Length: 310
Image 1 (cartoon, one colour):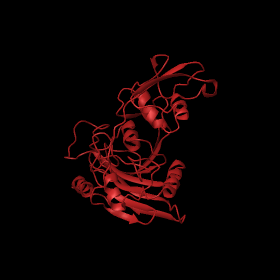
Image 2: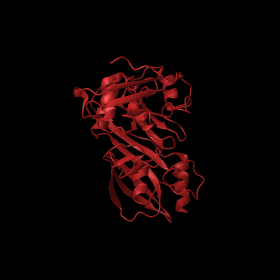
Image 3: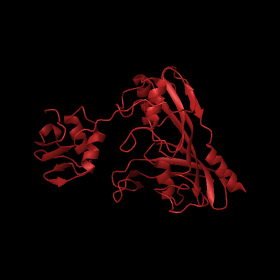
């Protein structure tokens, strides 16, 4: 097929060789320069239709059906290096491990094209970063939320990126978090195993038990119990969007001050969920040696623990 033009509407018939596969996979197959995630967003915003009806990314295309795709005009974004201080835990020719502060977006997105972690690492690394994730997310192989603090690995070349991405896919990366949740968790240890997917009622949220949700497993153990809250350590088997936040809300113990999944009121003046990505461990992409890094708890977290213990 001809390359997909920006700001265009194209209609085409599904041929035999493309029949009975997912719509997002079908579109990514016939337009290999564009990703499935790109088409998933188009489908979810109603810019892809089959026989004139709105559909989901998981919908299967049938031979002979007419698929209409509307491609919005591209937004030209100039991602500039910015001299933003970084809390560096480790660095070599392949990797950069940073302790991300609260209120910092990992990579540029609508409304956040400056002041992000990517802007900072572009400046620090002098543009020497992996390019697998494109211009917007150079070096980024995994993310944590804006208001979540802690350990994050940045890849300086594609070899390192490929290695870390495979380890994440194999669930062999060690990821331990610390968090304070509302309520008193009864069991000293536990596991939440519940699929996570986009909330059909609110596209800005994730939810458990939705159709086409992805397998997700979170282990937790109690570190300390307070009067109304519990201090926990979490270990991830999988890495779904908002996983810890969604899983804890699912069992009735949302993270303290979580603006999306928690109560509307919080007894403490906190900005965003009380969650810290403390420990990150993996095999070094060049040497194969296991490496583990720990980001100390941020000051606000330590102060909150002190208040709870009074």
